[in-house]
Length: 316
Image 1: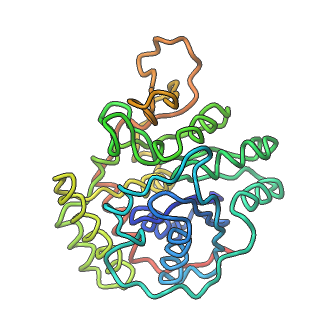
Image 2: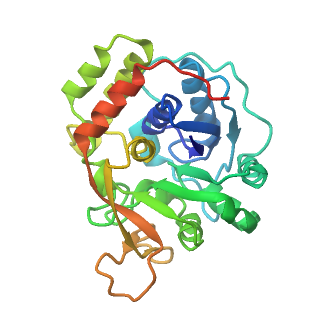
């Protein structure tokens, strides 16, 4: 059983990542922490609770984390355009019943790592503010981190918030720099593969046709997410970026990685948040992460479809 803490900013693709992890037989979610990113912290925290409650995952606690980046104001424009004003536009999902925990998300991660007898995987699908705060506040917990799986960055293809940067890294580049210089084992799923691991209209309709309530709500989420991608990017397919970070744990053959050195641009306004990767090994720096290079789209689509129709089984 792979024990994970999911740090996220729901967000349509974050919500689907949570559902995928909750329905995997080999993943145990120890807790969910939220961060400001796709929307304000209040919204992302409510959205995490809302999607988990809807799917019957009432035994996984949600902890609110950081409400703003380490050194900057929260960038709101693109998150609202793509995800809606509350961060989870589209279907009418009932308000959450399960309360948010009082403990700060960063403190929860630190406590859980310190108390664990085995290593834990961190899955980070939003800005890296919470993860950076953990590493700065409690550097001793690094030895308890199995790996950090991140959705973020663009190495070969252009960014989706500027021509150089992907949204999650751009929102808090200083936090990303802390994480990538930490010495932790890092797997980075970038836009280079997430914009290829897409759902087409037929894939969404096949999901809807499964007939269960979770498959139906995910299809509705994808309807909205697809519509904003068409409207604002002219992109006629629907990526589910964040779910790749869970999918790679379910089937490790789904994504191919290359070990390389990567740094974050934090000072140049033109390239702020760019993930600069030494794919050709010309800098002489020791590799500090595994970067996604190739993804099996068909495997990913079937994985989402198959897992959404599974009932939730508590692992506590």
